[in-house]
Length: 196
Length: 181
Image 1: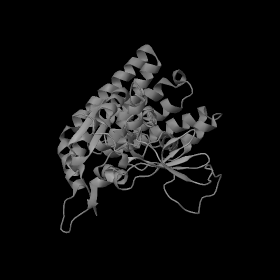
Image 2: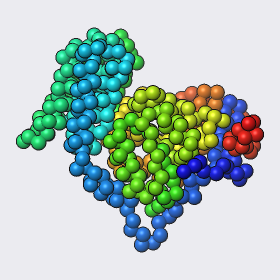
Image 3: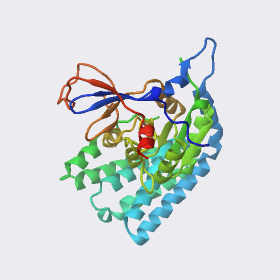
Image 4: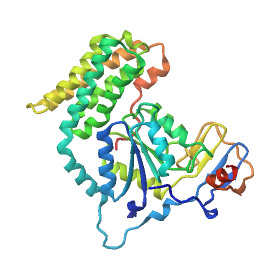
């Protein structure tokens, strides 16, 4: 497939020029692809997509295990070779992916613990100075939550564990950033973006 | 109730996580999309953006090589590519206020925090297709109008200086590039 045809003169943007800015109205080409539903049209694309996601979910446990293996490997590399930008970046992305996908895969408590780990990496002034146990406990908690997922009462235990870890991490971050107001503000600020 | 002709839209999905790309592809195909191109990092995404000229870009933030924020900044370069106005939906695990503001200031059109849902994704796509915002160009910003509503309730410094508007037709960027080339 190649690029779509180029814009014609009729598709040129309208530009209103002001003293220090321009307001540009590009041609609304995508507007041609939206229309009012016809009477009796019962098509529900969202329900169709949710159904497809449900069918895909048989693979989510396997995918979560892959993410956990990746996190554990990244942590081992950091322990062996230190917090180089490359290694801490890999650890961060592994935790960040669990934070983002854990809820979708059915492991919301693992996502909470992964978010807490991301906040430590984001806001610790010097990663080498973070207590080794604090990071290790997050990793072990995420792995345990996923591997013990099917045990009775595991959901409640997992959420309690994650929230406790988040509390300890927040306390540490607030203390270590007490003289860095921009980080302190970010640590204490509530999440702004609504989840999907 | 509105309907989108997804089968006429071309998507570029950029995420370094293959599982997340699979989920996105599944959702988009279920909506009715046929053309969904995938990139596994920001550099590939930029290359595919130039080659396929997608109608909508959906990108993760945290990616190797260069990230989704840098990708948005590179796309929002007037004159540098075929469609600097393309809608960009940032789909990310980041949800902190600071991050949302950074994405907005990089020219991201819509922000969607993970965990992803079919409804959330559909609504963002509907919004960029049915309610496009004008673009603002200043010395320091080029991207969708960051003011989503026009009201009298705003209090604070006025950052835009008004004055008499002069409406002009601007040649399409691709045509300008062809003339220059």
